Length: 166
Ligand code: FEO
Image (cartoon, rainbow, N blue to C red):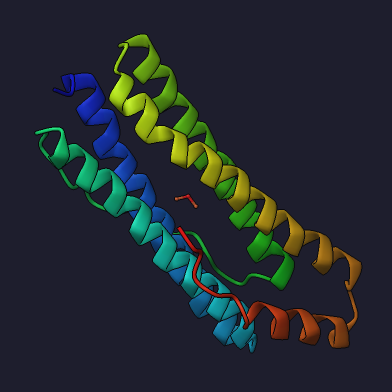
């Protein structure tokens, strides 16, 4: 049985994950507007991953006989971005999500809620991967700054992103 406190924290994380999906969907649209279909594809894949993250929390709350409560989503602040600023925003967003997961983990340990503690392990690992893959693109974009050919090649590379194997 989930505590009220834990149930509410997990519900808040559903909102964080759905908001993440919304942010990446806005980034996909912005990328299309800039003329970078490979970027758009990458962000769209990320959007789908975030929906899957939200679903993991949704299913977990129900599996523990808890109550799912869905809150309103905020408006993503993605506007007039550059290729680099899109990925810098993505990284800073993922760093925020990592902190959310760590706080949930702290709460699970504080409450000796072993099931939730173990459930969150997957997200701790996922966040390492998400921050790393975003940082890799930032590094590449910094290398090619001011070089349209380089940007074109990165766009081509991002267009090949496949869904993560779970
Ligand atoms: Fe669901 Fe990108 O963290």
